[in-house]
Length: 113
Length: 112
Image (cartoon, rainbow over all chains, first blue to last red; front, top):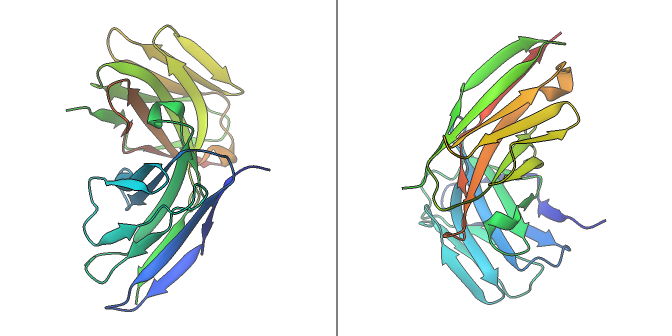
């Protein structure tokens, strides 16, 4: 079955550490996205990639970095510069732009300890 | 600025009852509107998609309506079940933007 897989489901980070969240899709989608979700707030866009080896900043890119070396993979690194990283992170993919509809992963919950 | 407003923010109903969730948007030019269901701790899943020419679309007990003139959409849930407890997110896409606009969602709790 085609789908989008995020791992790990739960992640704990110590102060000052970088952590990387994995996102893999086998839907042959060109576009991939990372969103952050906090309680009571809507999804906020961190980064997105329309094509391999290209990505753009979203609304809240500070303290995050991404790469898109393969069509199937779009990992997100939460750096130590992100001062409030505790949140639920969602990866998504789409055939083209967002008007084509997103397929979401099941999310990664990151907690700073 | 494109915006999507959802109401109510939260809703509690008894099992078996009907409910209606609202979505107002100012996205332009309009391309389509989607309703997603997000279970706690999971990723959102698409329920319906509506384009400019569509007024009503159903998916089982879920019925979405769209009034493109007033820029309003609603999601009606019939004969609610405990499994309907979730957050419902309205997402509006613009043909002029690569990124759609998300509402903050309505949190629905269905009590037995």
